Amino acid sequence: MNDHTSPISDINQPTWDRMIKRLEERKVPPHHVPFMIKWVKNFADGLGKQLKDTRPEDVKRHLDYLNSNQYLKPFQIKQANESLLILFNEILPREWAKHWPPGTKTEQPKLIRHEDQRNDSGQFEQMRFELLERLKNAIRTMHYSIRTEKAYLEWVSRFMYFHKTADQNQLNAHKISEFLEFLAIERHVAASTQNQALNALAFFFNNVLGIDISDQLGFARAKRPQRLPTVLTREEVKALLAGLDGIHALLAGITYGTGMRLMECLRLRVKDIDFAGNSITVREGKGAKDRIVPLPAKYKKALQEQLENTRKLHQQDLENGLGETSMPDALDRKYPSAGKEWPWQYVFPSDRLSVDPRSNKVRRHHIHENSFQKAVKKAVQEAGLPSGVSVHTLRHSFATHLLEAGYDIRTVQELLGHSDVSTTMIYTHVLNRPGVKVRSPADDL
Image (cartoon, rainbow, N blue to C red; front, side):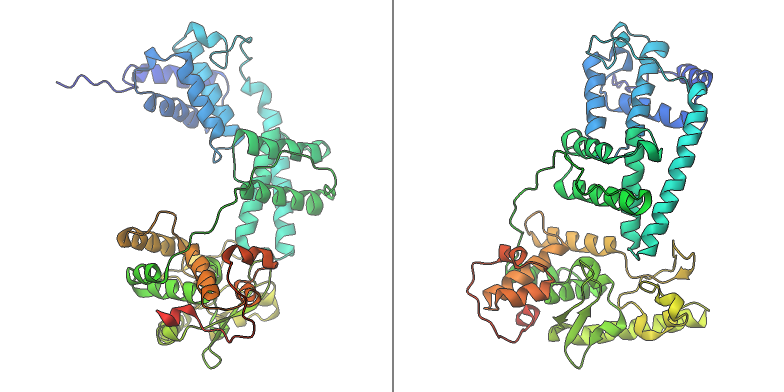
């Protein structure tokens, strides 16, 4: 007989019913109740012992973990805290729970009276929704990408939840500083994450609220680690590429052979490929800059075959009354029929149709980055390459191998699309040799 007891076995169904009833008595919105039960169950599942044996340090450790989880929103942490407070004060009363958080000797906080807060909560959500709609309109007016739109909306929403207000009269630069310090000190986010949040909030304040915050911010910045990029040898690149097949092998080869970023490669259009000139034009790269990179002769035939498959797929879509792809900026309004034309189609289309979140039109987007990243990760493991190798490692390897081959730093800077040569210098310690005609390192494999 197994003596192991499930952590939540000491909470039978009547006990759960009592907690649900108590939440209802507190006028907790019905759609919040399942989530509050879930927070308690998550705590119990990770406890490793029966809930009746819970000690204050167990609860404190769990709440500290939630506070350090950068993916949880402030309102979720608050909801989890309140759920455990109700459980250990009213459902399974414990003496130590009279002081909250557990382990402190402060007075027990007053539990939220949802019936008193319902109107305030509704007003907050309405104001938040209106501000986010204005933010969305501003982003689309300035033709930012859908990925930037999602990120900015998420950060501004988290900012308002953190301060529990969406009142324009209460939002100021000081609140931005508080939020950014919270991310760095409490959530321990990376410097790039904190910078993204800052960019989102600066855009929101400048373009939605009309407040210039450029000279008003003072906050603790997350530390940016100084790391050298992971670079593969030529033999390791060969091993990695050999572990891929189909469209993923071509994508990896093109990424290494051109030094393009992941999304730059996936967003290539038919018109960007110049077989006669052996070049590829990267449109709207980082910093909204175009640049030209070499088309590796090694992958020229495979790329032509890929375009033939893409053309057949596009023709099928046209026969089915579809075949329209997304267009950059306002070109879809300026040239309504251009989205169905062959030159504008993605070189690497998805195998399924999807609904465009902005226009609600059914379109064929490019292949999703996750499938490519997973294929590379699997190939890395099978080839026994070091951990940390990713799609972006191919870009690092491209730059390093060019410098090893004697190309000058300025040429490599242009090929990578770096604004400042100091960014490119991380790959160097190699003599400059200007004026050399660029040959893709993929052609030397």
